[in-house]
Length: 156
Image (spheres, rainbow, N blue to C red):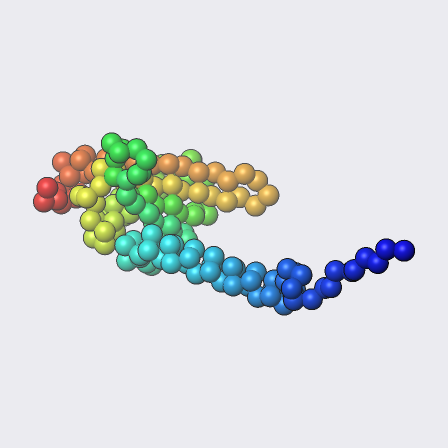
């Protein structure tokens, strides 16, 4: 009879205890959450003043503001984009949209300065219960707003 030695299980076997796996997963989650928080904070920090002003003006709108130029498309325009939630149909209410756009241009000029951008985009979204959302996209070219006297020209 041949004697075979059984491999010993223990610390030298290469196995990791469940406690260390749980700690590793927890650390990975904390690092991921922290990285995402810092990225979001740095990405949206320049627009906080405008976002807060829009929220003060349109309280239930949950505004999201972002801006800049797409890095992968070098010649693309610089865009200031605002997304707002509304509780009315943005497609069937042109007068209300026009008034809202006028006020948003004023707020953006006051709190962000529009001359550094090429266009101002606003997305109005109405989330209807149990139905698809209705959205409307409005664009204002900054050069046209400067010519109309609604935006101060920048020092280029």
